[in-house]
Length: 185
Ligand SMILES: [Zn+2]
Image (cartoon, rainbow, N blue to C red; front, side, top):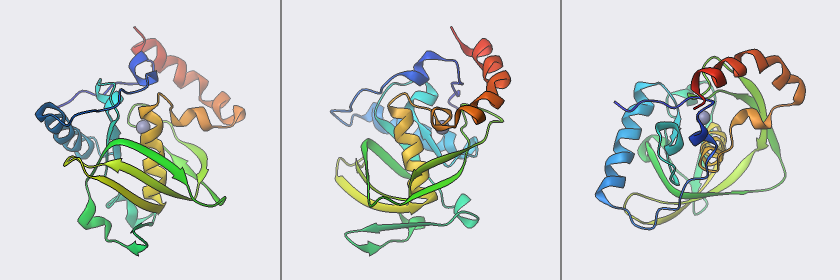
C-alpha cells in the first residue's frame, strides 16, 4: 500500500516531469495509485501525493457522483463514466470551455480535515494520454471537471487552498501550521 504525502512535504509543491515513455514501472505505479485512491476513499490521486513528481494522476468520481453529478462527452457524444473509470491521466492538460464558472467544496487527501469553496471553470476539455499511449480528449462538467482540475493542479505543485479567499485561508491557518510542522523536512 502506497503511503500518502501530506501538506508541508516539499514534493507536493513540485511540478511533475512529463512522461515520455510508458514503461512497465509507470504502468505498475498507475495501478498502485488506483488501488490507493480506492483504499483512501478519494475520487482522485496525483503522483506527487505518493511521492513521485510525474505528470500522472488517477480519477474515479463514480461513487461521489451520486450527490454531485458529472457529465462527460467524447467527440460531442455523452459517455457513461462507469465504463470509463478509473481514468488514468498521463501528461494531462485542461482547456476551459466557455466562461461559466462553478463554486463548490473541495477537499484533498493530502490536507486531512480541511474543506473549502473553490471557484473553477464549469466546463473543460481534458486532454491526456491513456496508459496505452493513446492521445484522448474528453469534455467534462460537474464533479469530474472539478476533480480533473484539482488533480492537474497537483501535477503543477498547486493545492486547492491556493484558490481560497484570504478570509477562508485565514481561518485554516492553525491546522495548516500544524500540518506544516508535522510534514516539512
Ligand atoms: Zn488533492
